[in-house]
Image (cartoon, rainbow, N blue to C red; front, side, top):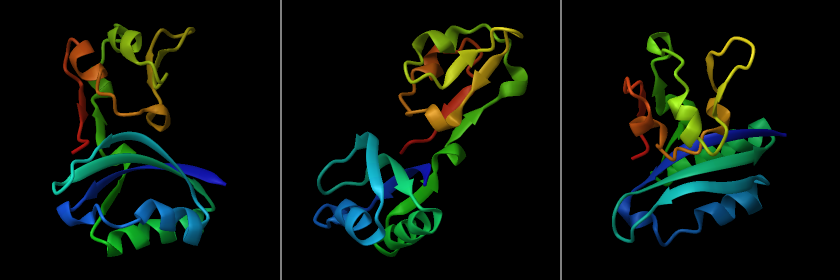
Length: 136
């Protein structure tokens, strides 16, 4: 079993479809909603963690795309200019998910995208504005 995180963008007319139900029932996937901005009759965004067999995750994502849901792996929506980082650690103070940590041996910033929950708190915390997150 593997885990993958996706940002899903829903069209305005998708609110009446039981998409997550089908992911669980038809593709044997465990789902974990990490962040959601969904408004009835408008576009919505969802950060979804899928857990299951790789082929089932791929089939589940294909199912979503056939229902006009745009699915993109989370790591393609997070941009961090690591080469410009001065390793000040400001972002680690606000990262409750533990995605941003300081290596205790090298005192270099480490960013684990797999732990990111797109809270976006790192954006204002970084004095050099090195984070960009496209959730919408």
